[in-house]
Image: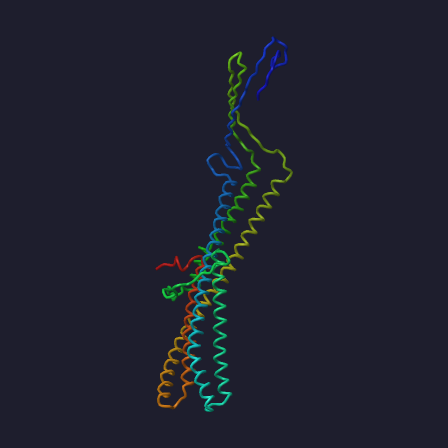
Length: 365
């Protein structure tokens, strides 16, 4: 405070005619000795609660980051699958077009009926339509990849090389091991554990509010009226703050805090049940895909042998060329189905890594 006083003292007594002023300042330091039932040197429940809340938020941030990584991976795999579908349909057109041209030439020479020509023509038109659909699907997959990467909407991502893909054929551990790993490493579980601990500290804080707060307060005062000289004063007190009667409000706060903590514990059970379902779905998808790949390998082996046999019979004029072309088209479709299944397997392992909290990266070698 600063004041200009003329002709009077601080007590308001008229004294002598003076003109001037004075200044006064106070510095205060308060040190909590006991707060929320904890003495100096121990973290109070409020501090612990804030720490656990921060841990929970960090876990939620990690969940969002892992989800973004998986979304980008899935979008990238979908682009690769769409690219393979385009290649498959281009190859089918290369196999179907000569058959159509041959049937057209035979029809012009009255060697086949119009119905036989139309059958081949329908197959050729179907192959061209499938190629258009595959290219449109690839464009959509590229847009989804662009969106998942956070790029501008008009931007298109071109995949230049798709040959050096990592193998996703990794032996799966038992389901119990995956669930145990997920419950230990999923960010949602860690966040919920931090929330439970934070609510536990909230209960302790509510209980600690029933105890008085003890603080050590030190004050240093300085005043200078320029005449007489500067005067100073030290004051140190122990300040006790508390309520004598709270009419049951403290007990109500403790009861409410315990109810919230119980709710968070029940929520943990729901989180674990949801995680178990996600792990089971990812595990089942991988095992189904592996079985599908095994079946396709056997079908490809059988179709390869059938193609060799049909070509031999065609050279001996025992089968028409159309029979050879049908087997070739079937073999192409089976090989492309295997490629797509391998991409699905890679995506399945990515999904498993997401729902288990990183099993694919953290599993023991």
